[in-house]
Length: 113
Length: 112
Image (cartoon, rainbow over all chains, first blue to last red; front, side, top):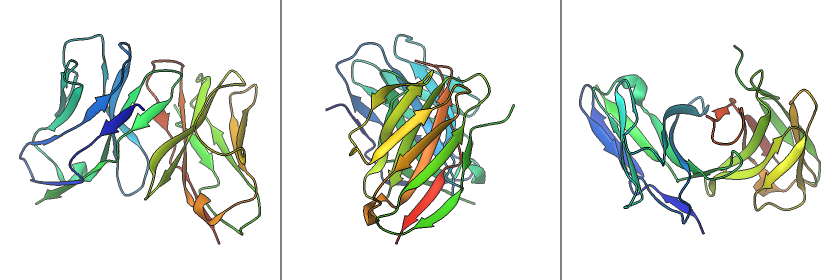
């Protein structure tokens, strides 16, 4: 079965510091897309960053960046200069076919002032 | 541009009843997918429609069904509700395969 594993159920970070959330996945496919979504208390899923598996360059969106290691099937998210508004549940996911996302269990991020 | 809109946002149903949830995708998006989120099982894929055709289906019983209309709006139906169907149901839309998937705010279903 294809799976996504987020080994850190909870993480905390001080405001303005940097935090890295881990994600590993298991698939035999070579063409796929990886995502990090953020789910605040409102429960709406918000796209944070996306990575195409065929691209070696790591994706970056402002304070958010990923470390994509295809051979190791690892896709970690780094949040720099953490802000109080970053507090949320973060989900790692991949898409292989037909807009079908497979999600990890999530990491709850707390940002301390 | 308006986002993905789901209605109703909250509803309470009795065991054995049926429910229909509605989703309006982002304008121009032809793919609509549905997910169930529960504390125990996390986020699980239900099904995906593209141009009125169901392309993918997750591992859910036949009580869960859906459809998509010509304007890309989608509905999902759950018949013979069970207590375990209580969940947040999320709708998402995209332009199609390998495009960014955008989510709505979800419909909270409580079965009593």
